[in-house]
Image (cartoon, rainbow, N blue to C red; front, side, top):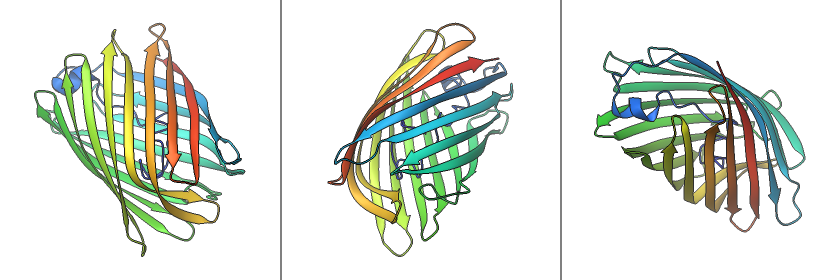
Length: 266
């Protein structure tokens, strides 16, 4: 999640550095394949310029993930997020747990929180179940519960993806319910191309209605989003991640920016 997630409904709040993929693309088509344990550290930042003379958004983050040979992954991120001249620290910890020896079922659990919570939720919990259907197809469903000082948001996440040779296509539906204020739905499409052993580039398109946190509360607006993402390993140990995004937040403003991260693998 990160700029790759783009928004409050896509999903509830950005997680700089992104949630790690518990299995590589080969393991998602061959789930019984042996997985090599590894630890990856990522640190970086993002900058987004806003129209209508609104102050720019900035994020700085440090993330750590460890993958076990069983396919289990533990990960976490510490970040500082600045928006609308307010800055929130944020901490997140997560676990990906394969279910059963076949590893065709996986569960993901996340918890995050911000002690200042001027912009980000006070606390947020996320759970998801993913099923490898075979022939490159993957289905997933999840729920994110976020508590803000004055409101509570629940977001249902439903998606499917298809891997074919060096390509991946994915669709995700986000349905957000703001306590006492109705629902908002958004749609996200993403395509990826994998090259080399671990490298990838991708493009995304999203639209719909989004619930976003601003200093005076939560607002609901129509959104349109375009993104370009990538990950490239310079060597076996060092790599780069990058995201470019264009995001129109109804008539309120348009965001344009990028995120860059430095990867270190052990």
